[in-house]
Image 1 (cartoon, rainbow, N blue to C red):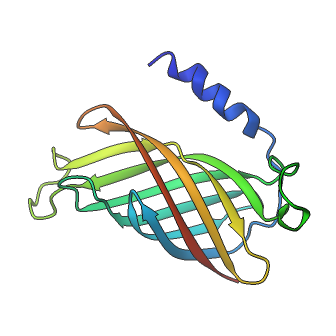
Image 2: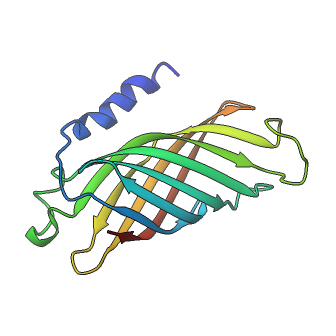
Image 3: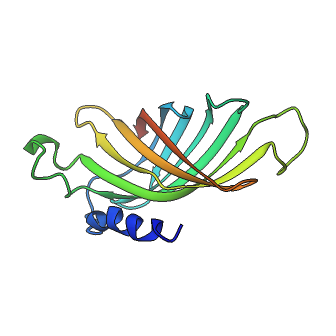
Length: 165
């Protein structure tokens, strides 16, 4: 576990230069992958947002997953390799969040072996289209389950959101 801290710092170091850009509004959409379900995103500033999802997972026995993340976006990192038209709308993001997965909704028990709690560390790419109030994303998420057992999991997903003004 002590080796993970330096590795995490090396991974996050390039993202330290956060730049404000055109992140605004509230979006609702669909996330596909692990998990698959409904997602919502609320921009707090030009570079920070809160994302939540309620989803079904394809893991064995799992029925429902609820998760929320706090994200920081960097709109400057990919500037050199992305065409001029996409520069202000493409961002690399990372953050931290929590998730709860409920494996058996019929048990009537709360916070026993049928409920797992975990910490999420999402990293991804986000793009907001110029011509439509739509955004797309793809992400990779290491998850540290902390209850009932401590286990590292690796998740990935992609999705789209419609943004309201």
